[in-house]
Amino acid sequence: MTSTESSSMPTDMVTVVSHPLVRHKLTHLRARTTSTAGFRRLVRELSLLLAYEATRDLKLEPVTIETPQETMEGEELSGKKLCFVSILRAGNGILDGMLDLIPSARVGHIGLYRDPETLEAVEYYLKLPDDIGDRICIAVDPMLATGHSAVAAIDRLKNAGCKSIIFVCLLAVPQGIACLQKAHPDVRIITCSIDRELDDHGYICPGLGDAGDRLFGTK
Ligand code: URA
Image (cartoon, rainbow, N blue to C red; front, side, top):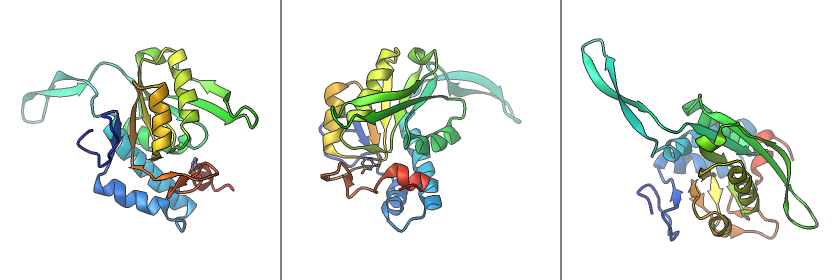
């Protein structure tokens, strides 16, 4: 387990970001009385904090710069560039905060819906940068519930040549984590909380409701 987490998940591939700011903002995000505007703002702020955690291992290289006082050796990012991939539609809520922190990242989109008969994830939209295989991919979806759409999205990323993938969500449940880890044990998961369970309708409990509806003010 990593130093920032407070969970009992049995793997160092799951990080629960337990910073006090994250816990505070997540509590307000969950509250049913939070307005659409407030919800959007909180998702943006939490996403920025999650992006900070997801990019913790980026490589640096030395660079010589002049400060107003003297010459010094600084550091700047080197190596692989990033691509954020939004799993539509609620993933788009997370992109804004991540792009606030890393505006030069490329962005891909994956649209999936669940076939009501086969329960398989069916793709209706896929647009990824051509050079995605050379980038670190951060796939975003606010809710890791059953895990089926996360698995299907990561299947597509790997088919497109991605070798380095991190999955970032606001909330997860043990069932969704198990499903994703079974299919893709190499994918690191970063979340603000591991909630108790899914209800009979596939909603995370205690959760925050339907993330897409709350972000976009739909019902
Ligand atoms: N998707 C949501 O938006 N909310 C849940 O609780 C589960 C999946």
